[in-house]
Amino acid sequence: MDIRGKKALVIGGAGFIGSHVVEELLKHDVAEVIIYDNFTRGSEDNIATALNDPRVRVFHLGGDILHSDILEEAIKDADLVFHLAALWLLHCYDYPRSAFHVNVEGTFNVLELCVKHNVEKLIYSSSASVYGDAIKSPMKEDHPFNNNNFYGATKIACEQFCRAFHHRYGLDYVGLRYMNVYGARQDYKGAYIAVIMKILDRLQEGMPPVVHGDGKQSYDFIYVSDVAKANVCAAISDATDDFYNVGRGVKTTIKELAETILKITDSKHEIEYQPADRVFVTSRVGSTRKAEKELNFTADIDLEEGLRRVVQWRLERDGRGFE
Ligand SMILES: NC(=O)c1ccc[n+]([C@@H]2O[C@H](COP(=O)([O-])OP(=O)(O)OC[C@H]3O[C@@H](n4cnc5c(N)ncnc54)[C@H](O)[C@@H]3O)[C@@H](O)[C@H]2O)c1
Image 1 (spheres, rainbow, N blue to C red):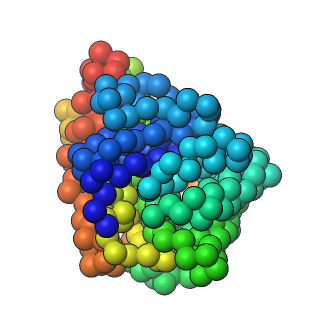
Image 2 (image 1 turned 90 degrees about the vertical axis):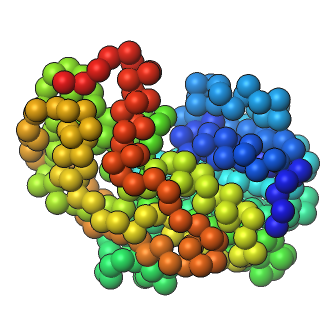
Image 3 (image 1 turned 180 degrees about the horizontal axis):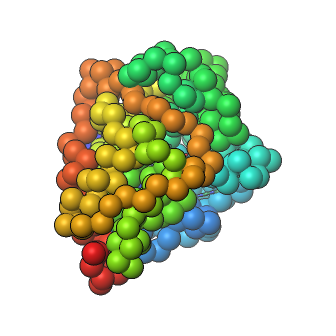
């Protein structure tokens, strides 16, 4: 699909990944980008730069996906919808009913209204959480749903609703299963990536970084602007009614992650190991082949470069260096 001149609605567009999707869309000559967000976790700061572009605005009536009458006003003029609004993993763990309402019912509202208003394509943010702990590695898209938590359950349910809306009503959609996303504007709430911000906090205080557990848990870290790029690739591609991993396909342990941060910040500290927090998944790396082939997507930013960007963003934000 040629997305030039299209009107895009980014639901969850003031959040960590959504705000980068907004910026990525602007590079592709879209006519308009409307941000629909209830700001429970998103922020004005995240979208301050994007709002300098006259094509971008925050939807004027509000932005909750549970308010389907207001959501309808936003969706009815959109050609493309990117749906990223969701409660995060630990929130779903503590508040399963809210997880059901926001992630499942909210997504159902989005799907229903996309059909009603003939949206040309929906890009749905799913998650590698659907796979749970890896049974095979790297995980291909046909890896079993080995998930056992509420967050993953909502993502599996929504993937199924996407399929059902496609088969019943012809809705064109692509679902993206992000691996572990990190980058500028991330906060402390990511279940695995929060370690990056916590290590940088410790280094700002002149203290050694802490890693919980033995540091051998391994993940597939992908920089946030690459995830934004994958959203746009998915919109442009001919792919429909399918799900794709969005990762780099590179296995990195938490220990390696911490060591890379120490290297980039020129820190002489040694990692301090402490007992593990709640760990949901201990090993997860995704195969990148299907997204490469069918979405024409490959990640551009390796871990060291991505972490340099995070460090730079923290320096600019805090005005304080790392020891
Ligand atoms: N960050 C990751 O590593 C990761 C990994 C896999 C999947 N995902 C998925 O990607 C999407 C974006 O994640 P993120 O990390 O940017 O999270 P985020 O919390 O920063 O963004 C979600 C946005 O949705 C908004 N929101 C929440 N409830 C809403 C509601 N009821 N109505 C409207 N807006 C609402 C929040 O204010 C926030 O701005 C989510 O669907 C998430 O499940 C993220």
